[in-house]
Image (cartoon, rainbow, N blue to C red):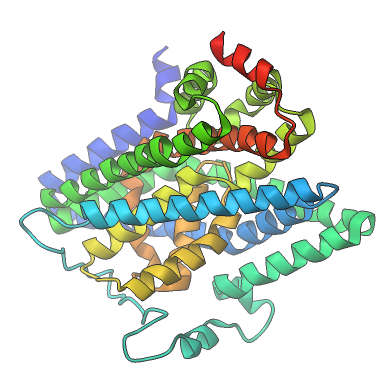
Length: 414
């Protein structure tokens, strides 16, 4: 029993956080020396980001349009609308709560190990074109080796569309990309077992460098993400459910076993087989259920989008960087692109956040290390992802006119 608990990832993270907190308060000098643990972890993850996101986007786009027709078009439209709304909700909550501002202390002046935030894409006295041109790599390989995320993402979208157009002739290429993707995800899962060490180093350094007061913004960040998820579920998903003629609360109660599984494992994909059967019982066509759920785990991750939006506001506020309305608008546009590479695998939203920061340059990418301390506590992220995909499946079936309303009513009443 004890060994089983000790192998639990959440327990390991919790112990690491507690140890890092105590070390940072007891011996600030030693706590500051733990920073390389999180730095090494983050830089290694940074090596995975370009190829991983490239393969994810290519495979998702190539698979999405295959034989789907009008259903795929409606699916993309719905998914992008939900992505936009989730990013907007996250930004609004971040602006209202100010999670990165320490109460009574003002913004914390952070020295990111000598790194300075690069000029944002829309500086006050310049146009965005030079910055965008500077971000373009000189060679195709440079798009991956120089962390030039924006051109790499555009290349992935273009290749995905080409493979979709090739049909059967593109299958061997797509199969190779998916095999490489599976290998990358397996390596990523193995590497993420070192997350407790990175969390220990990040917490010890944060507390020793900035004092216990730095924990208050981190707690506010956690509350802000959960509040954003609650607002999105009750507001956006609740409205969609009402328009489609079913009760969101009844759906949550009916899916309680699957949602509990997601909360315990922290993985959105853990309940996928169960959800397929449940939604088919609720009157959704089998083809629509399987297509919407599988593609939804890449294109419709509202919980991850909420996290990324609130995290961006947290990091900029914590560093004392004020974002203009134009910069926030750029984040929304870039976020709609980078979140195409999200997936339900553990740590994906964290990687997507790092990719977004590498494009925007509002704060250095290393800033995401501050969030490692609460990464395993983001259960609302996976729950919102799963619930959002279930609502999407029902909404798309209603839009297509293929939803069996009597079966849905009977299922939710059971």
